[in-house]
Image (cartoon, rainbow, N blue to C red; front, side, top):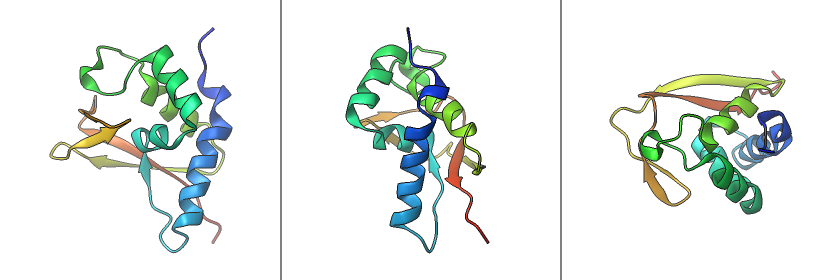
Length: 113
């Protein structure tokens, strides 16, 4: 049976928490592609094997980054913004990809104020 978003929420949350710890003064937003890139390699490889490489040209409607995105949306204190990337190059798992949408979601854990 394929991995479902609810099964990787804690892994995705750990990646986002690590970003917050690394850059506590800015707590940057990151894409699902970046989250996928930072997941443990074993999990990353399994997601790509099951769901395919991310991006518009992958030929897969619900690819690995889509699953990561859905998992991120399940995190309790998630903040989601969007970014127009129509003129940007993206890389994920060491390959250049084209996003399936010109605007991608950006994620981070909300900080306590």
